[in-house]
Image (cartoon, rainbow, N blue to C red; front, side, top):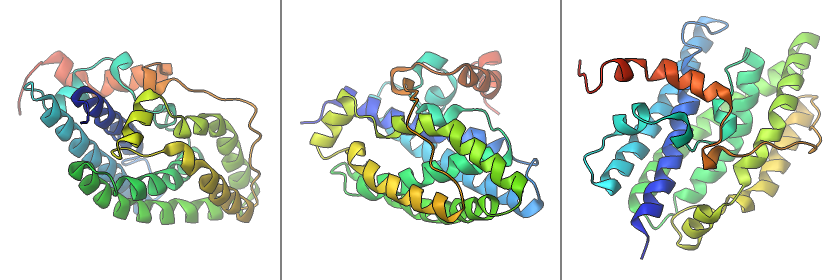
Length: 252
């Protein structure tokens, strides 16, 4: 028997990951390097926001307390969010965005492929849709890694700096706390630790092809699953949640 509160917390995590990364990507809307890329980034952002809506909607269904997807997106404080830290980091330049996207895309594709096998039919259905999106996301971000890494001196240096700045945050992708372990044992969630060797192999191969160097594993930052975040998330939420905070329960 799956514990209802544990399932709710687990699904909420996935919603937080999707919403926060989707919002970061949405900040490129009308700011992309050229029109086609502006539209592409916006479409990827919409994929993640749509994914967040499904996870939050399912969370509300499990809670059965009158909450809605908006309740989880707009009515919680920073410490109540449990997204991975890599998702909340400021947008940065285009190289930083594509570096983060590639590292996350490699992880998400493998994750959703496993989550499709979940005994929870709702999670499996969401994962089925997300997996198809992630196939496109990874193909796109990989192409940008190759173009920027093996491009000009400036594009190469910017991308290498971005990879270096992000690397310590990738460890958290594969951390397994007690909840992850329980969900994995119940065949609801994914054993993320088991995804790490193949992720490292794929990332190393792509970075090498792009003439980039895999950073040393000499620093790690974790805490997102416990609600311990960078100050960047607080600033992001103050902007994202402004209308609901200023006009609680207002409908348009």
